[in-house]
Image 1 (cartoon, rainbow, N blue to C red):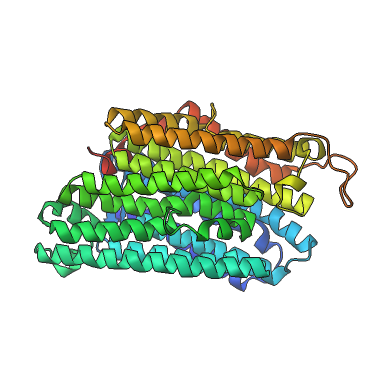
Image 2 (image 1 turned 90 degrees about the vertical axis):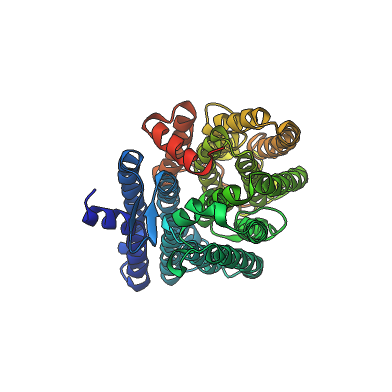
Length: 498
């Protein structure tokens, strides 16, 4: 790529969403605010595609004094962010129309929603593209600020409480991550790295063997705790069920589908440095412990869950725990499975959360016990929600089947038999809970409650298209990664070399 092309490809995923956010913030015409939001996902997907085609052969590219950098992992994550954002933004107009019909907000609220969503996308892309660990921390902190307003968008008492809880817990987590970053910076300076490069990720990877082991160990522990909070891992996970259940459905999809993964990718970047400085054992123990505790909590709560949006939120914790376990295993197979799991979970959870928004508008409740006979009352919506749940349960042909199988194989091959077996047992518990509650919503006769339509309700082409597209993409990834195979392998090699 020429320098001008490189600059355009590395800055567009940040600049275009910011420009669209400003456009929404200042827009007064209704037609502008309906579908212009697809510009940001299109730009992110286009830049991710260019990088996916060039980086495997040409190597990483950097600009702005190495503040922004793209390697194979960056290209993979941009494609995931772009795909999930496309589905969520395509679902946005239908969601906002239902909200207006229900009396929740007018044009001003819609403009604010759209502006914040695209600011959120810009912050996530900045985190993915950051080569400097300080810039990475700032970008992830920016996602907290923007999404806090989105969580409280409906301005109900529950949503405002969830927003404050999200801000307090994630701010504590981000503060811990900041301390961890400072310690890594201190270790780099003590190792003779200049100030300008002491937080540069490639430089730290190259000189990791010179870092002080004790300082690096403490810094890594704080980073796992801090960014683990944003990824929904125990012990700083308590914000997730409330925030995901109270946020607008497309925002819940973005938070669950990509924000958690982007935050955990930051942990994986630090893990490469720590593994080279202090060996694999310390980070492996930390991630294994966090993964098993998170999985046990999610499985236990899912057994007694009565709210379908909170059910999806705890399902996100289950999948992030599996991703953390794959990161702890750390082999090329495990990391490739982790990256495939990130993509498949993002697509399936986007469909599930977006469908849950339509269910909420149809039934006006999030209680599982009050949503019965969904297949009879709204066949299209029930079918899409059911298929998304099957994808989250990791049934073939969806990609989560292949990725969970890959994590399990890698775990036993790496000598982590008992943690892997324990994780699989907990996944079975979550499987039983999720499938039984979803069946309760889908099956049976349609309820005869006041306000319930007498005839089956159609989902509509505009609302159905992003949901069906997401399911097809998730199934396609489960059958083959096609032209993305080389990119996936290279991305795994960057963070899974042992």
